[in-house]
Image (cartoon, rainbow, N blue to C red; front, side, top):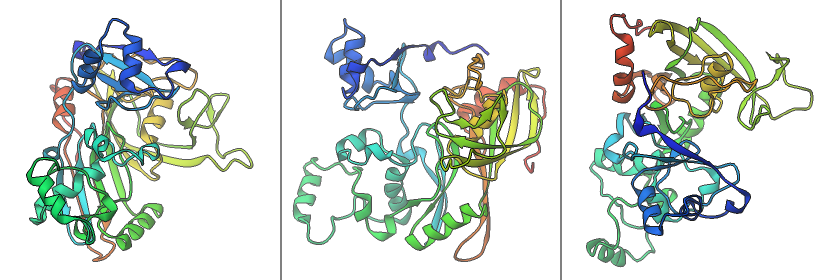
Length: 378
């Protein structure tokens, strides 16, 4: 499948003088003939991404490691509340179908962002309370906590100064609207996610994740022919080329981290099923996680020589060899399609499944013509 012209972009690597500048200022400097109005319009019209993630926040401060992509055409619209579906909810937890294109929680360096800037690109954690309020038929936005000027709040809301869907301080929301993430999915990964609704359930779910008592399955489409296998490695933040990866020696995965190295984390991925598609150019695989490290599946498949189609980061082997991606995938082809666990409070066995979203299903369909799909019970 050929690359979509709409995804064609000019890539800009930032210079030292750009560090600390806003995205709009950097972009204006990189494209000298542009005006401030043009730059802000490009950003608001979804033509700019930073480090592979669409960015519509013109005031974002840049770092020396940031990479800007400037697209010829606007990219897909941002995720909205209507795109988020809660498939299970009770007094203790909820299960959510996360769409691609939204970050699960705020990055640490964004913790002090203003409400206005949070509203530009909210996280899934920030978008769930109003969705939860709608399901429970509760008021949104809720009244401010006691002691604050509720009359002024009401007046501002009536006069349009207060946005009905604005992001509030999550810690000050009523208990029935609070959510607590217990794991994460990458921004461009879709699929099922689990959130706690109180601190007690949060602690119990986090312990269940540590004991590997929450079972997760992923579907991915990657390059080449993959055989079912188990991949074990020790992951570090920088494998030597500036990105996360496994500790290696002479091209082989290390069985254990070096002495006195407490930064490495063991990661175990089970490739439980694989089906070749497109005459063997790609494989439709299903993976089960034994551990849940950051970017684990993406790293393991890439280092094995089978990067996930559409992955903008892990498309090189540890040796530096680039694996060209001509798949035309609309995003990284990774989807969390199943989650199963025992309810920490009631003890009920719960299992949820989510089919491939339309963007991946539509892209994959021509590859699957004339082929039977895998057994869903794999």
